[in-house]
Image 1 (tube, rainbow, N blue to C red):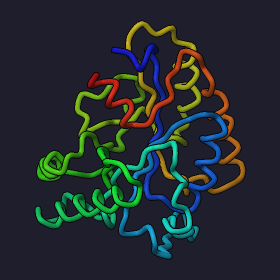
Image 2 (tube, rainbow, N blue to C red):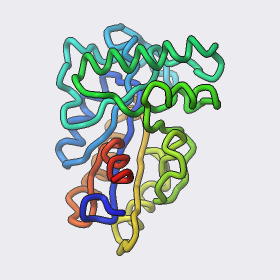
Image 3 (cartoon, rainbow, N blue to C red):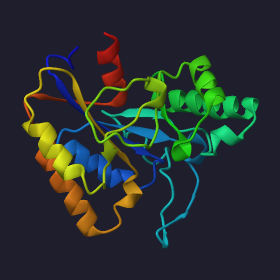
Length: 230
């Protein structure tokens, strides 16, 4: 199996869709990197603020103001309102997935086939409901710190968080490796975690380092899935 004609691929996955995605998408586009953005459609028009590390964060993206923000990337489900799905009754879980998927498809104009679990949590009932709703993959948050392909697409473990201390070492290992079998560098996070200019500069330096490599395929999550299923 290859990613096109390459053995190595990089994909990103960012959750929640707050206003910092505007700057993040611009940065990814600058370096030709692709990401999947996991959105809660029930929050896309809310002035929904919350606190992260004692800082009040800005609201979620308002779709009507930024309808083309994610062009060239992938939009995927993150549930309608971001609850703990494994703590809900079956019908409520189904409503969260079905409604989020349907609204995102109406807004963005293509089939929504992927997801990331809110809070990274799920159970067997949630897995069953995802299959019933045509969700082909869903990302968890536990990192592998490896470049292996997922054993289960509905329990897809990333390589690491995008602000993990180990990310630069992993990137150097990945870039310098002469691959003769499929290798996937899967990076996840939330744009609101970039809280200072230093954070942004460090992530920009990381993007610049991994970008424009002739032996690497830069993919969205669903593109990785399609390569795996080809």
